[in-house]
Image 1 (cartoon, rainbow, N blue to C red):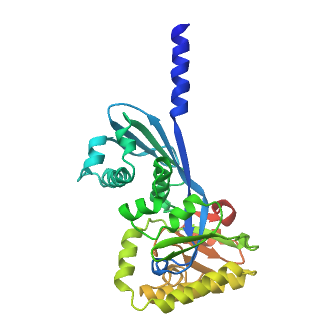
Image 2: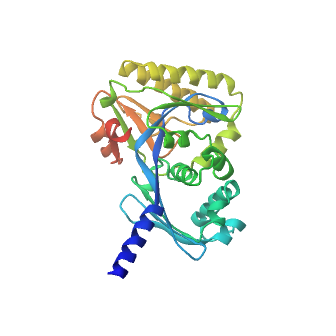
Image 3: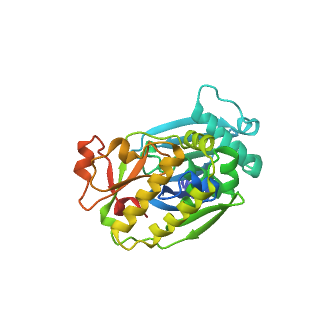
Length: 319
């Protein structure tokens, strides 16, 4: 009886010490790339996201396991506290390398999670396939920041880089207008409930786009960007205020034209879907992840016939 009581007490204590955090995924509707130069960007949190579960352990190490949406393990490693402190180089494992880099930067902001602990068992759980590009990295950064009570934007800047709009989506449960002013994020929650949402679908382009590579490419190409920023700001406002599907579609089409000129790239509609009866807009890094399609008719069969079977309605995607 005594042993049983002690066991139950231990289980109860472990439950008390267990911590869980959750962050939303993201889609960037307007302002891709130019958000880095101060443009107003409209971003939408998704119904998909990622959780982080922390439990106490021993041996002054982290036993880390990452699960994909189908509960398969896509990453598993043991990371010692010493390796976090030293920012150990993992030449043969780029995922472990990036994770240690994040944890090292987190340690610099709050060393107590290493100094005052004996070890952790940490699991992450995605509710979307990790190659969808909905924010595997940003949700992780935000979850770690919540756990360690450190500034998520500082952690992002010191590890991945980027504008930070994805972190804002991780934290907010409604549409946001995101802007960088003097490199500081300004975030406004905004009502965005298009009455024509049944005409909007999100289509996966069957490949993940590396946003860091895309950002580097943009920064190398940009010329005089101030005029473009003003035009994108106007388009973002038009998108927010659109009462009809055709207004919304025309604004997104104009956005594609502006960014096509900046990036010196064809729009995705010109490149892959020239015969589509509607408007298609890239979301985030051009050339991969999801695009938005707006059309009078349900476009599911059109995209399936083109070889793109993952089509998600606005209702099923956006929080």
